[in-house]
Image (cartoon, one colour):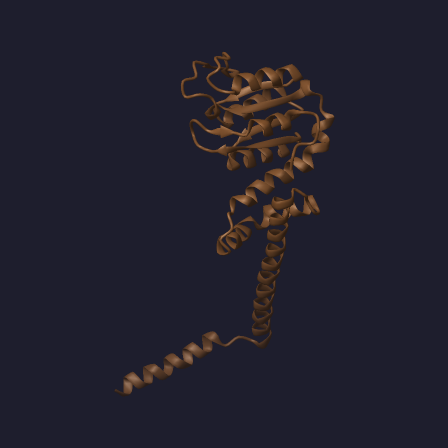
Amino acid sequence: MRRSVGNKFIGRRFFKTIVMFPEYINQLFYLVGEAVILLALLILILSIIVSMLVLYSFKTGNFFAARYMLLGIVLLENVITTLFWITRVDDSIVDDVGVRLRNYINNKEFLKTPCAMRFIFMPQCVRSTECPAKLTPEGIKCVNCGRCNVGEAQKYAESLGYRFFIVPGSSFIKRIIKKYRPRAIVGVGCHMEIKEGLDLCHRHGIPARGVLLLKAGCVATTLDWELFYEAIKEKEPHA
């Protein structure tokens, strides 16, 4: 019994010896804790502000401090989407506004580029499931069979001077960019593909426009063709 009490006493003294820190260390821990709390509050406040701007832009089509807003979306995306989820707002709005912002920011440089130096990347999933076209080193070559709208879109785009590619994947796009060095790009895809594509174009210094699919997937996806035609014309695309 005495040994047990003695062991406890020694243990307490040993514990106190370990956890006792100089006063300046305790003060440092206190300051770090305050800084963490203030940083968390700052991130939350900025995320709420950016979330409100995202909703405003989505509803009105107008952008306030576009570059700073895009930076906020990129840096605080996880927090913003969490806030949308908590408030039961569709968080895909964040991606949608992010694409619109990039289109808006890129617009001036895009319009400076002649159509002959602009490329269009159309995903293969937009074509008909009965498409007879074959894959070539230059992508899927449309035969304009009339089973979908891709042939008509390609004909119109090429009449403006664009180069039109029906692509099987992102690796193909990277290869075509490396091979031909386009000066501007219009890309069609789902939220994730457009986001990755616009980031890729930004790294290469290429102004780009993204056109989102109405229905994503691997096959039989749908596209707002009016929005696509508007994006490849000279005028500023609809926000």
